[in-house]
Picture 1 (cartoon, rainbow, N blue to C red):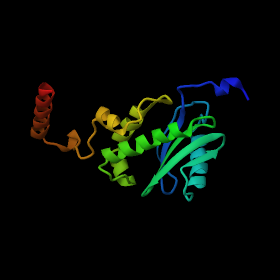
Picture 2 (picture 1 turned 45 degrees about the vertical axis):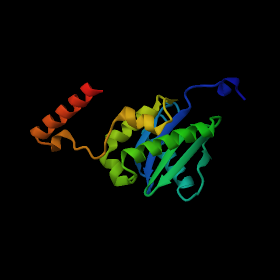
Picture 3 (picture 1 turned 180 degrees about the horizontal axis):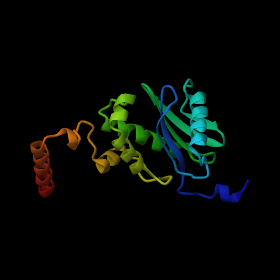
Picture 4 (picture 1 turned 120 degrees about the horizontal axis):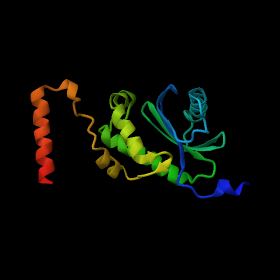
Length: 178
């Protein structure tokens, strides 16, 4: 075996993706540009992973030289992919952090419709946990605090000017009191 392949590295996560119960991509982030350089290759890999895992009752799979940890919830499948030499427990910690952070952010309603309605927050959570393949955080509470995203907040476009001003006053008041 190549000794360089066994060198410890901070770049532990190769990809993260979320699929629906039909295997369609809802979110994906690939951190290794050489792994699957085209979208077609990425979707083909995701399809192969989904076909192998959607009926299985496991938490880990090995496919195409990759270690894949996964979890399903209602109509979603969450996947974290690492190299074949990667520590499964670290990948599982990332997966659990992702799932628990989204569960808190979405008020325990982790299903396709809610996820799609809050996709901006989902990307923030993923970016807070992993940056360029490096694991930054594995504590869901810390992720939620850093993201500071609330699923029930109305976007500014759906608020009146008075509501926006009141919200701004509240935020300024609380930031001064801290």
